[in-house]
Image 1 (cartoon, rainbow, N blue to C red):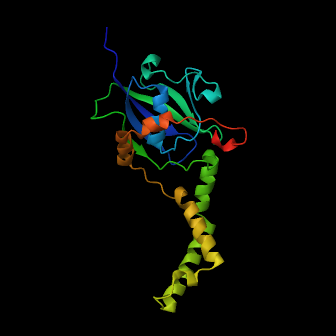
Image 2 (tube, rainbow, N blue to C red):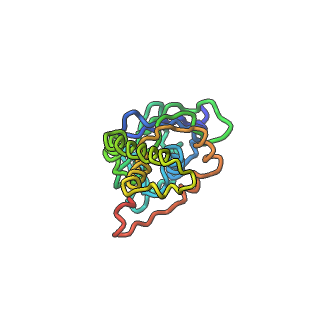
Image 3 (tube, rainbow, N blue to C red):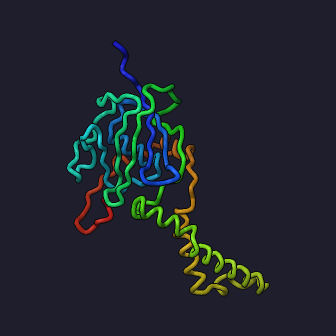
Length: 228
């Protein structure tokens, strides 16, 4: 009789986004789905503010508000095989669906677990309308309106330089158009930053952020439609 596995390597892929946003993590098989939720939140870059559900072998496990089965079930109980897949959905409103693939059983151990060993693409902002809303905002952030705002800002800087008045405050050169352009540029920032930092994820794991996010409880009210 072979010994029970100790670790599993998972690849998490966010559905509906191109170029692909993905992560690769190693976790102990004793990890429960509830704990895995916290791990995925940190790994992907989510904030742990919405409900979640796993779909494994046609059974839904997740937030009690969704009438799902109790997620305090360890991965070992599912007896996964390599290349098996299951899904994880975060935020029932935006419906961020992730495909989870079992890449390896008992891969070479690392110094600490959980650990992120790969990935690509920055996580979309929370509450941006799901995959469709994110792609729409990303296209807008690189489109004509964005270039027009940059032109406004270039003119603003030219006015400051042309005035040759270092003692005058910048506010003297501000206009409603400049302020509006600055606000739009800041709002676009999360949609044009595409870098994923594995070291930052593992720093959060070592700090226990995944456990903190796992413990967050969401009790939605009838008026708060965005919290799902």
